[in-house]
Image (cartoon, rainbow, N blue to C red; front, side, top):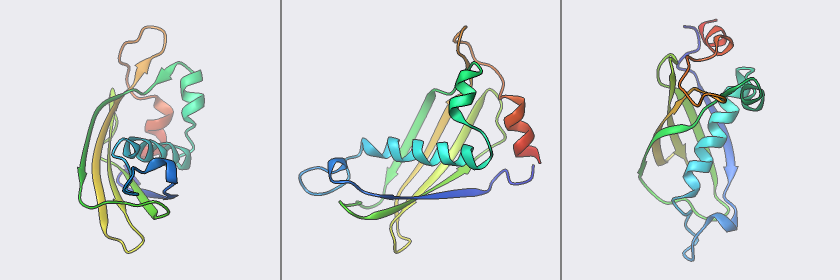
Length: 136
């Protein structure tokens, strides 16, 4: 499985509206940062999340775990590293590391998503085109 555990990294500049009165990133925003990392990870594989949904497969989050190490602040540039944990089955698992510009860990996270048929709302196996890209 060539490239299975490859990381992808995106940069995000923390916006004012993502912070609380202390200028610290509100914990609820981390789910958005993880989603941004995941969408870009898929895009770099050549997989469009939008086209996947249009073809009848959606990926709801079924589990999310975050471990906060330190705070991120307004106007910080943070780096979201996204890594596939295992070969997808009816679910796909990602591990994340969010760091600051110094490389210090802000947050680590794990997210599990299920592949769901849009019409039946039932689990399905990972689409073949995703497995083909991961395996090559």
